[in-house]
Image 1 (cartoon, rainbow, N blue to C red):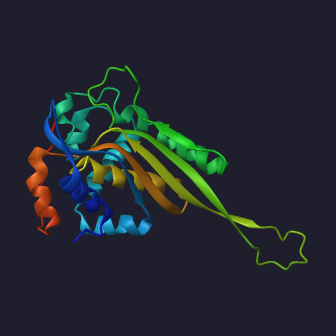
Image 2 (cartoon, rainbow, N blue to C red; image 1 turned 90 degrees about the horizontal axis):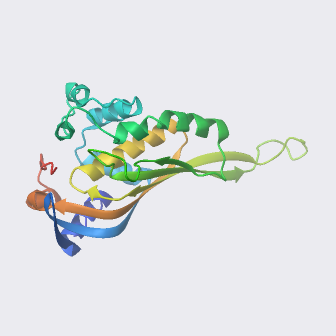
Image 3 (cartoon, rainbow, N blue to C red; image 1 turned 90 degrees about the vertical axis):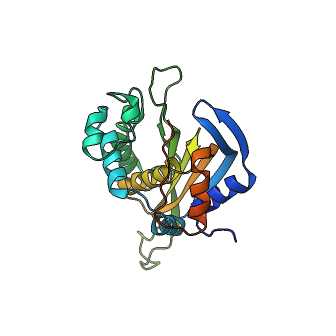
Length: 234
């Protein structure tokens, strides 16, 4: 039976239809050019059924936005998955996410339906010890005209606008076991910062994969086993 959780559907599709490839990190099973479209109901389903380190990921995003690059400071918050990068994150997530608060303020001030607000992550040719897997995030505001409740004889009776937020994200590479659910949660938190009702988050996954070391536990997860742990491949 196909899982109803859309994230689990991605995992199942990789297991059932993925190709095999070997890279410097080992063997992977992968799919290319996948689209994951998530409504608020889909997000709730994922967050309720899949264990996500919400507190750590929330702290991590805040540290990214503050431009903190020292891995020791992340480790102090229990965030240990950057230890392999050495003492500092070079041209990685903090470099680019620190621009996000200013972008949020710009969106709030302008609220332009005709404009795409974009956060770019990564710089071609830049020295880095962790090229962001999440490469671009775009925010669009969709206004819906509604009739005013005022009298039709009132000169101020004009359509009013209520806005909803559409988030689109491009990922060059996505570790389906660990990175993908974390990125989904980060995108959700980013949407909340903007403060406009969320309509959808859509991820365009250029390459989404499961490492060979995580295949067995992915089967176990989809079969309903609890407390499944995945291996970080670096």
